[in-house]
Amino acid sequence: MAHWLLKSEPSSWSWQQQVEAGAKGTFWNGVRNHSAKLHLMAMKVGEEAFFYHSNEGKEIVGIVTIIKPYYPDPSDESGKFGMVDVRAVKPLKHPVTLEAIKAEPRLKDMVLVNNSRLSVQPVSEAEWTLICKLGGV
DNA sequence: GCCAACGTTGGC
DNA sequence: GCCAACGTTGGC
Image 1: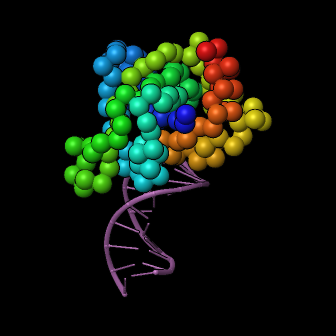
Image 2: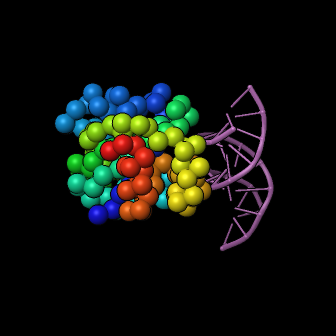
């Protein structure tokens, strides 16, 4: 099963808000980048993703799961982009910071490190397992 | 607040 | 179809 990383600025959408959305979950919209779109399209219901806070915190704070596969984003006038629905699964006991990821040689190939601007990223099995471990999950 | 990196736009 | 100019993102 594939794993992912979703980035959000806490000022626009935070982990706290994701948790408050509860079991119903929320849509993950606003993606306007083709690479990110391709990743969104590849997501399947039940797959899990890290929730990363950019700018403020710069750390992985929780895990979400996909509850609805890719569908068109009504807020996108061009009709080119879509979104998925996600729901909070659990927080990381210890948020894993960008600093910690950079300091870990086994995570040096993470997309987060090499292409930090991409808002939806794939995470390898090894990376997923290691970050869960670092996060105390 | 700055600026590098990246993606997109638009003139040719 | 190329590429310069511009806008946005996000780490610092």
